[in-house]
Length: 559
Image 1 (cartoon, rainbow, N blue to C red):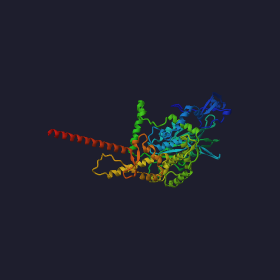
Image 2: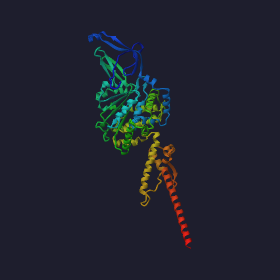
Image 3: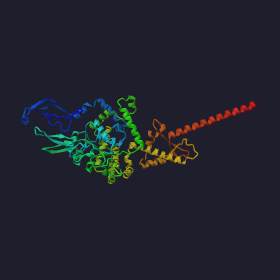
Image 4: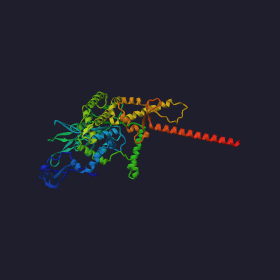
């Protein structure tokens, strides 16, 4: 619809083989003849000759067929396949989701999984299991919830945006309308029907009436809308993911209250969301400073008079181009249907059983639907890599997203306990090295604090100290995280420093023949300080020798 214009409608007549080629809610391109028709009944009602206009269709093509045939060229497919082989692809996709919004990696991960989607299944032809992933963004004002929805509207191949305040039950599902002149009843699809095979975005979800919110229960789970009005009995397809944003009851999320006391949403509607992201606006001086710097840089980059150098200086180099990302998502949704293969079923069973046990404390209630949610998110993770099968890494990602969703909805003390209990699931295999690096740095911080307490009062405060962490202590800390094999970590760039060894660590034997870990920067600084000390001593000896020689010469001259 052009800017400033209202959407218009025109009747299209489908004849012969074109009958039933399209359903309500589908976007189509029609080629036909614009013609007139004399309607005697219409003329009798109006009292003067009136001709109705219509289009006699010759050819009808669906929008998804148009997109697949026009938008993806052979060059695009080569670029997509090349991008899929990037080892850091998952992180790049997450960083490319709403790149103008700083942080919120957990939200971006959930949105990315929802945009790729899982695989729909027909169980022996009896019933259908949806593959679309529903996401609810719930949290404090000013946390960019609406901006995330607007980003998805622009990026998703097909999206319909609406608000809870301006949406009714028939506006979301379907309405039956009576023509004022002919008296005929016609069926009009709502937002969920128009978003078929796409995503329906609902902002201000908490502002909807309960009756209107109840009307989308069928659409969110069965992905269909049943109509039985004015003699029209039919079922419309609503195969779309629902992404909604809502605010807590009191405006801000209170971690001292349970999840049910913070939201005004019923359990049936909450259980239909695969992932509920609780966003909290917490005060953190370091994070707030980085956020402010990002916002200022973003404004500088977006200014119409910005120079190319300024634009490049603040641009995120690891983000994927948005046009390529849109094509990548479209290609993955159309062509990739990953299957479950060689995954650990017992891991999913144990997580579900443990979550059921822990979810009785007032957070998000865990139901059988969450098992399907894990599978759907694992399939979406496989689609990110354009893989034809689901791996353990995909399952680990899905479990960590679900656990973050459940844990953040708990009261503060319960959330801390659950983080400790499910720590091995929250950190995936590819993140193990980062967790070990974090633990190693914590040990060095403790060693620095202890060294400061032990330092003699008359010691030089500027003297370089080589801090040591015993390997035995570090490996004991790793065993607490249920990590036994550290070989991969010791050989990784995170430990050695990679191209910047000055920032890495090294294993060595100290004076007591104990296996320890030291910082390369400390060793280099200590070696440089020792070299400087040796140079100073050599210079002092040379100066003393010159003074002795001068004194001897003066004695000889006096004699």
